[in-house]
Length: 406
Figure 1 (tube, rainbow, N blue to C red):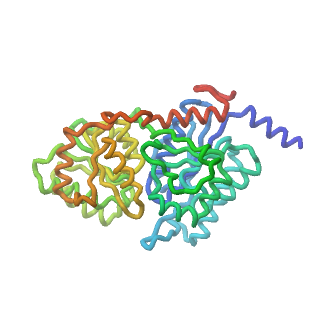
Figure 2: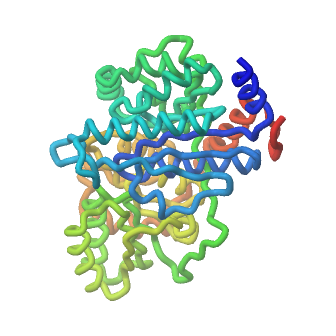
């Protein structure tokens, strides 16, 4: 009893703690989103500490904001047949999932967060968050939030997936709130999910997450367009179209800055490097750059696949963009790009319109010079997400901006 009273008193007087869970089995999106949110919260209240649990293999290559740190969970990777396996350890997928679950559980119990924000997967990867969520519910101390990007997948596919994973039940059972990092007027990611009226009442649409240029960033001085397939693991087709456009049109300008992303296969990248070398400086390519915000800010225009984080950056830096969305294994990027094109925010190259050709890419790159920037569409509240989430977090913690313990 005495020990419990001491612990309760310590929670009242200590600085608040926020824990992010970002499973990151593939790509960079979850980690970059959690990093942006953690930075916004700790800037608003510098005494708050934020810890990110992530499975991203490149987490250590990112700079993290003040009062924000991360723990790298053992990695998993997707096999060609759609299954998962341990990225580096000689463990079965069941063993590595159990190891990750135990690390998550231990971190949650020791860090003892006031708020837990789980990105996208209500149960975590293969249910690895459930033991920690069960403990948190029994303790009745932490405020647990499910964070969703603007688009998850088409409604029918998503409903079947969430039913199979038990995600719908978990969302209702464990979570105090749901935050959507987008606008309902653009897309509702929960469409097709049979949530209760109570759960929908505690779902907040915050807006997209504004990005800022890193203070120490320095972009190239010569004019360039930025070509980014995000993490790069599924971006080979888009990169091929861009290189083909420059190969067929010696007068195509400005030059292209191509960031492959850390997950483009070495074999494919080697083939692209040979083609880039023959373009004699008209295309400059690098594997990975953690300062994407800086490169984005300096570009004359963007060619991308339209993942969530790139979309936020394009909106933030108000750059004309050509999006070449993937349609497999999810329709997420296509849904986002289609709706954004309808609103006049972007230009899309659409496979269903026969536009995935070097000729269409050439016209699109040339058109960037006169294409309107996203701000010309004027969508109210479009980039309010970080402010809305930071304010709501401080409300939960009973803090004011730039304030420590209340």
